[in-house]
Amino acid sequence: MQLIGEAQATAGAAPGDVIKDGSIATFAADVIEASMQVPVLVDFWAPWCGPCKQLTPVLERAVRQARGKVRLVKINIDENQALAQQLRVQSVPTVYAFVSGQPVTGFAGAQPESQIKQLIEKLTGGPLGPGDAEEGLAAAAQALDAGDFQSAAQIYGALLEEDPENPEIVGGFARCLIGAGELEQARAMLDQVPARHANHAAIGGARAALELAAESGEIGDPRQLQARLDRDADDHEARYQLATSLFLRGQIEPAMDQLVDLYKRDRAWQDGAARRQLVRFFDVLGPAHPQTKKGRRMLSTMLFS
Image (tube, rainbow, N blue to C red):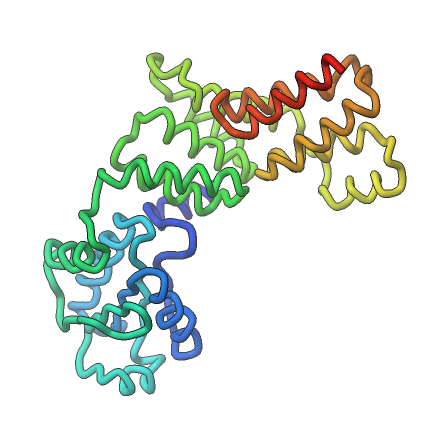
């Protein structure tokens, strides 16, 4: 439930914390340095400011919709008076847009959402919205493969708001839940998948991941399992568990390497458990995943060697 709540609270955010609270201590990193990569909006606000309470949610929604093309840093002027004075903030809300380390435009007072979107589109050089869905899916998949379940869940959560029955999005979000150990939430999500999407590769992969995680249970910390292997390289049970533990944490290639090593050492161990587990990994990833293709080539080579 924790991952679901956090993803909903920051729906649409892309990897890298696109919305954050800033201060004079973090301003250089969060704004000056970050704006060398993407435009950064700086929202100067105060808890007692009524228009701020209207503007900030609008800013956050538009920034999340941009999915990483722009960032937002919120500065409480009551806690950062020296910074507000340095940037000549005379009233709140005031918003500055930074590009390449410099403020390039800005406005004061609450603005309609259409104006905010126009500003962001001008800064990013393109429209916001559903056209970015493919890019969002790619970013989510990259975060998922890297084991960054929180960032992936944030992106998938935003995409779900726009396309709640898309099987690729649903399957990806379910795998985030599985990676975070929230198996019951993942199961409930997959149980609601319409019958027409039941055989989609992403849904099948998520179900396979859920089954794998449920059967694995408590398989131990990877560091402890690695320590066992350091003491005895032929501790096949430790290697098998380490591979599974790494895979469930998103460390796909190292996990496969451990199973390949186990298969080379003793292909008959537990009636070929290493090969069977590799095949299950392929089922989770799907046939088009680069690691599946690589793993199948390695497995074929070993089978016929």
